[in-house]
Image 1 (cartoon, one colour):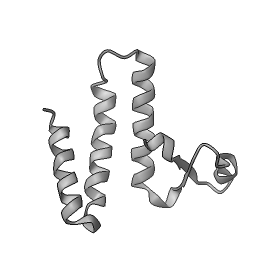
Image 2 (tube, one colour):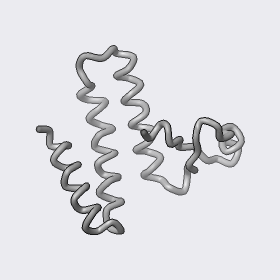
Image 3 (cartoon, rainbow, N blue to C red):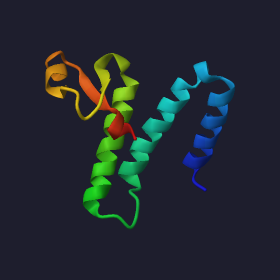
Image 4 (cartoon, rainbow, N blue to C red):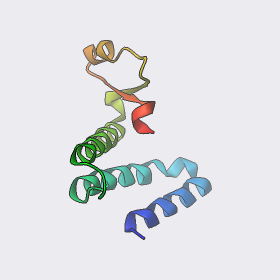
Length: 96
């Protein structure tokens, strides 16, 4: 089992017990996963999908680390208009 899997289990447990204190732990997990995707890509998938997965994880981790610079959206939200205000759109579909 990866260290990351143990950390995820720990954060899940802490989130249930102390939901208000778990945000920074989740952010740390996203940031760690961002670097893991870049350094140790998943085997068995094409290079293009490996790069796409690393790019999406990086986008999500960076956005969640700076809550003042993004807004939640979906595939139907006008991300171009939101971009005019200097904000990024973090889509629910991307996060899933």
